[in-house]
Amino acid sequence: MSILSVKELYKNFGKLQVLQGIDLQVEDGEIVSIIGSSGSGKSTLLRCINRLETVDRGTITLDGDVMVREEGGKAVYSDAATLKAIRLKTGLVFQNFNLFPHYSVLRNITEAPVCVAGVSPEEAKERALQLLDQLGLKDRADAYPYQLSGGQAQRVSIARALALNPKILFFDEPTSALDPELTGEVLKVIRNLAKMHMTMVIVTHEMAFAGEVSDRMIFMDKGVIVENGTPQEVFASTNPRTQSFLGKFHQSAL
Amino acid sequence: MIEQALLAMQLSDLPDLALQMLEASKTTLAVFFLTLLFGLPLGLLVCAGRMSKIPVIRYPIQLFLLIMRGTPLILQLFFFYYLPYYIVGATLPRFWAAIVAFALNYAAYFAEIYRGGIESMPKGQYEAAAVLGFSRGQTFFKIILPQVIKRILPPMSNEFMTLVKDTSLAQVIGVAELFRLATSTSTRVFSTVPLVVAGVFYLVMNTIVAKGFSIAEKKLDYYR
Image 1: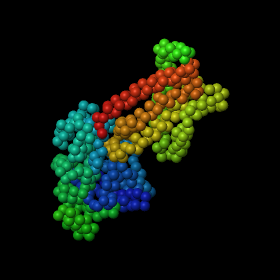
Image 2 (image 1 turned 60 degrees about the vertical axis):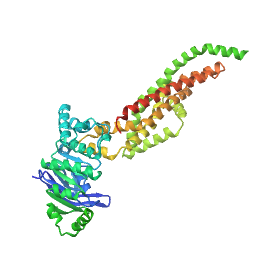
Image 3 (image 1 turned 180 degrees about the vertical axis):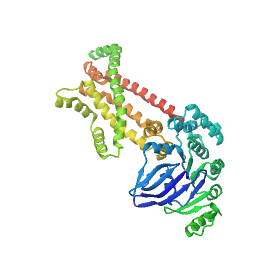
Image 4 (image 1 turned 180 degrees about the horizontal axis):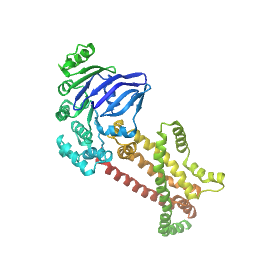
């Protein structure tokens, strides 16, 4: 069974149709990257799946729990308990990290497990230190976010998401706010997560990285999925829209 | 000759005057602290109403804010002292009428300061809290409010210092606070000395307020 299933998803911002019938399945352990130009709807899709936007129509199911379904042409969200259960199974890493500046690195990671998931403070701390060690930030536990480099901040935000032991982790352009050197730090972390078979959906502009790390690549354009296949298939696509987008990428790579 | 006699008398009376003023300062401080005790939480409620998406709540609150900030506090003191008389035939005790006027007036200013702080918070903080599963209450009290407090300290210190001085307005409805004592003593002994002494009292109180805020700002300096 798919861990994530999206069917016939529609989202408008006023008259602007951002998502126009998205169908997407993600299997357990799979790594899917979503590429596309700005305004193609890829970030909105991620935000809809993480309930930062409400959808107009369509169905989203996560790990067997229905988040939203369609009834009479309208989106109907599930009850609060189901939505909370889904929350704890998913994690989202933002482009701008969005760490809590008034909390230390450690507390940024432990706060949700303790206050939301009901983990004991000792256990949460132990898990947080283990995650920080794993992400090469062992000595930064007592630092505050303003003292971190962008790469460190993004790694802390990944640790914060992982602390809830999500079944699927979403990344919304995780390296777009970073310079190339810091980008490398973060991509390395995502690669390591891939080796551990973490299920991930990554919205990115890092085409080479996406091709290398993903099992499947999705190319979105104007609110629809144009390509959905292995990186080889997508890079070799003869679809003019795909070629035009990848053409720009190949040019900028030169 | 007479003037010299008066001056001599005043100088020897100075310790006595200071004692009386210390006594009257208790009332001043009571107005100050009670206004904060009621005004600070009330301001948060008013702010919530002002930021409400429901027009039936938002519009009356906007009108309240306009009236409280748009009319003189001195007038509001008279209003809250005399109004109950025309409605129920009795007035509140002078002191408590003053507290009502001060608390409502300051709540209006506090509400707008809170709103400024809350609206300056990046959307990302709410979104990060949401995806981690924090409830709306947890998000506000754990994530948003602590950061808002840090941001609003400078405008709040303004309000606190203004409040110390504004307490002197309570005398218009007969509250026996520091300024009333200073003016009445000044008239009685034909001297401006009591007024100067009162000025020193207000300055000392505000020095403490300013110091308190600078300590608070330093304390919250551990993050940016």
